[in-house]
Length: 68
Image (cartoon, rainbow, N blue to C red; front, side):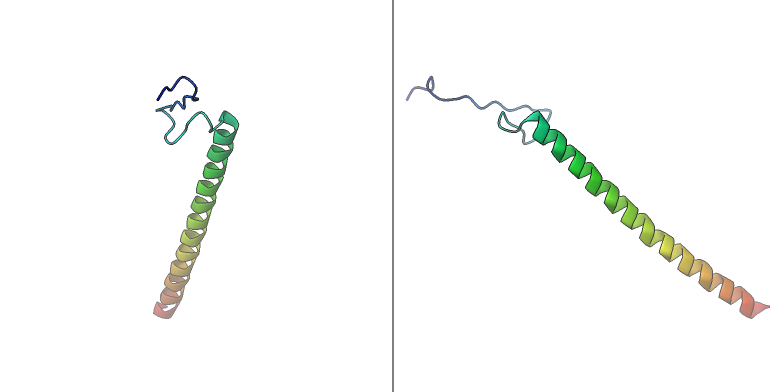
């Protein structure tokens, strides 16, 4: 069977999973979305950590007050 009538699909190794049907615009939107999700995860993690620190500091203050 001849391949001359078929469209060749090329892959770009520096962008995993990308082929000629995956346009630059779609890839840019994907990168922005992934970055936004990563930032949201970091914010949520930091928020939980801050709550944990506040809780521990509150317990320390209460313990110090009991000592006095």
